[in-house]
Amino acid sequence: KHLFFPGKDWANVAVKIDFDLALSSFDDQYQGCSQQVMEDLIQGDYFTKEIESRRNYHRVWQRAHLTWLRQGKALPENMTVTHAVAILVYSSNDSVRSDFSRAMASAAGSPQQYKHSFHFKYLHYYLTTAIQLLRKEIVTRNDPLCYEVHHEVKGVYLEAPMGATIRFGQFLSASFLREEAQKFGDQTLFTILTCLGAPVQDFSLKKEVLVPPYELFEVVNTSYHPRGNWLQLQSAGTQSAYNCQLLKGILIYNVVLVSGVQQSESVIHIHIPTLF
Image 1: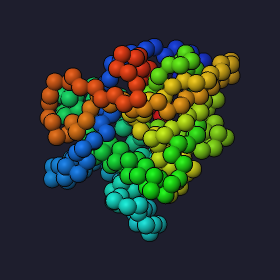
Image 2: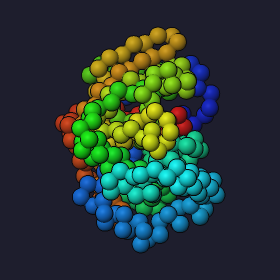
Image 3: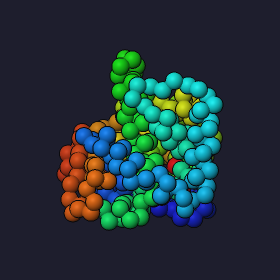
C-alpha cells in the first residue's frame, strides 16, 4: 500500500506500513540502455517540452545551471553538466522536489501513465544516471561502498516490523549528520545504511547522500516513543518494475526486475512525496 498524506496537518498521525507488491512508482534503472535513452531524450526535445509549461521548473533549471557554471568545478568521469545541474535542481528547490516525487508515485503507475502523464522523464533519467556514475567513481577511488545517513519525516509516526523489506520508491536526500536530519522534524527518523546511494555534497553543497528509488532496505532495528519513532534500515538489494521504458512505448506491464530479494517476499513501499 502506498501512503499518501495530501493535507498539511501532520500532527500526531500514526501509520503502520502495510505489505504490498503494487509497483506503481516509476523506478527505471536504465540498465543496458542508458546511452540510447539519453539520445532519445535529446532528439525528442523532452527538456523543452517538460519545462515550457512550468515556469517555476524552468527558472529553477536556469538558476541551477548558472550556479554550477559559476562554481567552475571539474566533473567526475562520464558525467555531463546536465547531470550536475539535475542534482542541484532536485536538492535546491522544495517545490520541484515535491512535484517530482508526487509524479513518480502517482503519475507512473502504468506505461500509459508514464508516457502521457509523467512530465519529469528528463530529470528522472539524469538523476538516476548521476547516482550510477557517482557510484562508479566511488568504486574507482576505493572509497567506502556504503554510507550511514539519516532522514526524518516530520509529523508522521511510521512503524514497520523487524525484518521487513521496504523501499521508498522515490529519490531520498539523507544527511550524514543526524542533527541536520532532525532539523526537518521530530516524528520519524530513519537511520539508513545505503549501498547504492551517492554523496552529492560537491553538487548540492550539503553533506548528504542521494538514495535511488529502487534500493531495498531491511528493517534491522526500531524504537517507538510518544515523541518520535526511529527505524534503522540496511541495504538489501534492488527492485524495479520498469527498465528502458522510454524506448518501449506502451507495453503490457508484466516485468519485475528484482535483485537481492525473492519475488515472493512482501516489500513495503513508502510513498510520502510531500515530505521527501
